[in-house]
Length: 117
Image (cartoon, rainbow, N blue to C red; front, side):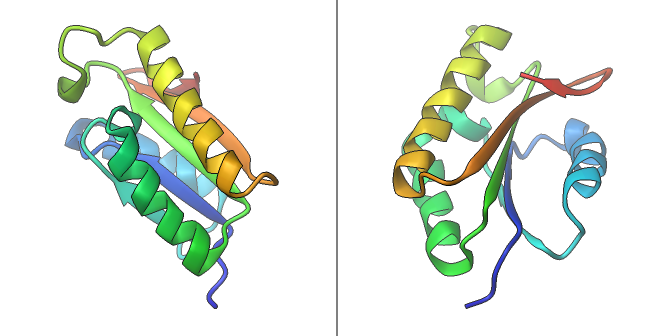
């Protein structure tokens, strides 16, 4: 088995790629993490959970970093930080059920930078 230090989950939105990539690299060295890029990040709970489960099974990361972002088209009208936080926490909880020892960090990328969610 190849061991990943972390799994990063984020939206596909190109506007936030540089900020998210820069933040990831402050947390875990490049090449030592798995990545899931999915429209809306945690809003598509079932599909993202399924993909994350594969990473957990194959590469056993000890940490998951969930990135939400402001102005997400996948969220439509309900695009508040509270809604992003609720969805990220739901995903976090489900992944901790699979691997209880996981450390999960939830963040939000804004036009001003990446912040705690």
